[in-house]
Image (cartoon, rainbow, N blue to C red):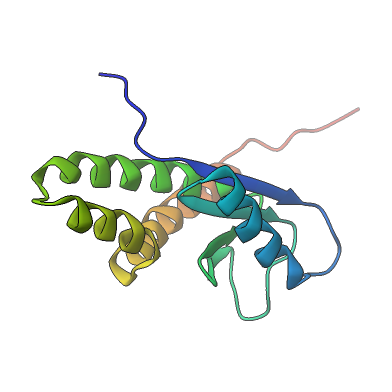
Amino acid sequence: MNRTCRSIIWESKRAESWSGGWVQKVKDDQRSAMAHIAVLVSQVQPKDMGNFGEQDGVWVTDYLSFIGLAAALGEQLIHVADAKPASVGKDQKMEVLCTYPTGVEFRQRVEAIIEIFAALQDDARRHRPNRVTA
């Protein structure tokens, strides 16, 4: 069954150094687009952040991890949408939809998925045959 669950807005940056203003710009774009989740894909991340993480309500990821993050976010939005009919009232539904993507449980689930994805990518890279050029 095809249905729209929620929307994700994506922003991409290819810069040499991190700019704190990017997060606010993506949040502004998120509000304008009425998107439910905002993701910033960048060559560089804020200090003390690995391949991905959440900063001020915006997911920040590197280019190697964004496909795994996209899959994880999409999967979680589907789970939230499936749980929505089980909620009793509209206010409860809205609370679940607004708080879950920025909550600890969601972040931990996404981190676990991305870590597995990154491990699979590393494993695939290690097992590629070496190419010899003449």
